[in-house]
Length: 307
Image (cartoon, rainbow, N blue to C red; front, side, top):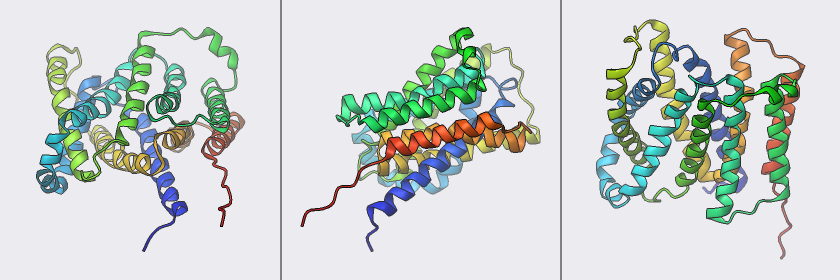
């Protein structure tokens, strides 16, 4: 039984939204770990757990698909380096030397990078509604992060961490574009396990170096730390990357990236539920602009078919 394009797109959007929700929770959970675990170590153990969970389910498909992986080893290594080794590690590093407002503002450059790179490499049309959508969404995010006091932007001082965050946004944009080039005969589980493993291998020397030189003490594995690592290892890594890959495959990089703009909305809701932060009129206005911008950007006019 064939599924209609509308049904397929619906599942693509659901996948993108769910992945974004899980990533929004990652920022809430990881906040409590930043002062106790150095950035590379946090990234290393995150992916080590993801590999451990995925391994029993993906080792047989990986062995079966190994000839395909070997023939595409450069693609696999680049994808692993960008999406696994670098992206989250750069965010963790950035969070040590810049403010939350700066991180939020720079994070919205990711979908803009996607749009520009899609135009350059895929010749994807930059329609007027996409640019209007990006403007509305960016306005919503700016209002949200500045709490409506736009004058705050005049006083922002950019720090070293801002450059790391900008590099993280560019890294994830390129990773998302590369997902579209995944070999068609390479299974999802094989692809994920191979990229997770290579990403972990690339992180290993930096993890060992950080462990030998860092001033951080070895973190104690209390219930909160254990839950946090399980969350970012299972849900914010394995599950979210599976869903994001499906979304990019179904919708394309540009439309998927627009859904990523909802991250501040879900982060705000999570902060309200778990941290007791209040949701006010500014938050509601921001949510309206973000949602309106996304709907505008992904809108496609349907033309009647000629008989």
